[in-house]
Length: 208
Image (cartoon, rainbow, N blue to C red; front, side, top):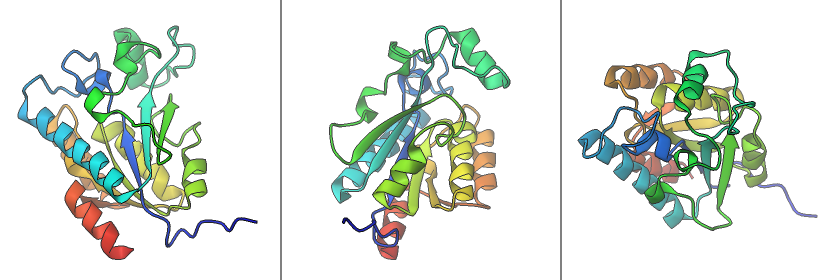
């Protein structure tokens, strides 16, 4: 009988949230306000690339989370302004370009990389994300994505409530309004360690 993974020795897991065309490409319908050539956009994509590359180099699991709805939006909740706006924009319809991952941040074919599609704010809501974490045996999460104040904060709060130790790689996160981004990070600091990609890897390796 196989032994359960030890959460104290299992590698950390990277949660990469919404690195999709719709949110990061200049032609995306719900991009975070970062135009082509915008230095902020370039920095976020560079940091996200470093996050994925670093996890791959270390052999750490990566869970790539995408948001996508049926073309008729029958699975999209209409109780929140953010999702009502998504429907109005015709954004992130499954099977269309906007719901695809930004090519430079796309998952690779690997036993260490998983793709999860969700239809709520938190990546845990109605998905197998927690089941994957328990299967891997991980206790520590390094989280990043766009936008900081929506999927990132929602997922981080959910992860903390489920008992995970969470670090947020702030340089691989973004929001359309820098003040909103900063406010979300300040709020999450109550329940997670706010760090950078490089410092997050260093801290997690030091704690191993």
